[in-house]
Image (cartoon, rainbow, N blue to C red):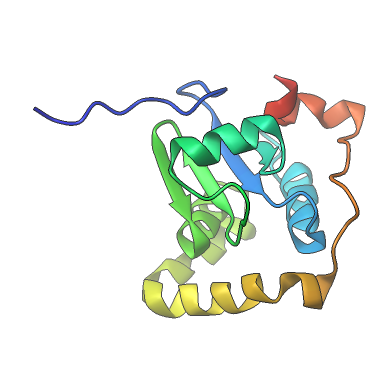
Length: 146
């Protein structure tokens, strides 16, 4: 009998959610990029430090105390590292969607570059003291504010 997949907590089947490290400056910048260029509001954002983010991490069996990759969730599926990045870029308007051609680079090579940046993100870009509160006009775009 096939395994029955279930939706992560706090999400509906239609949700497309980007989980990000809310205290990482690079990740906060990525979130701002998504809010700016995702004009059709396809994506919702969720910090991994939030109770909702922690529940989603547990659902997919990711550690909740150490987070070293961006995750992208579509319904019951979860994508990480460069696969997540490219899947998100593919859904953004041009020119950003054009970057999805990078998927033709072997995953091991893409993830090597991704991991190099992810491991050094605090040193390269800095760390915030706390997760930023989304501006009122964007609150509905965050899972924490459904």
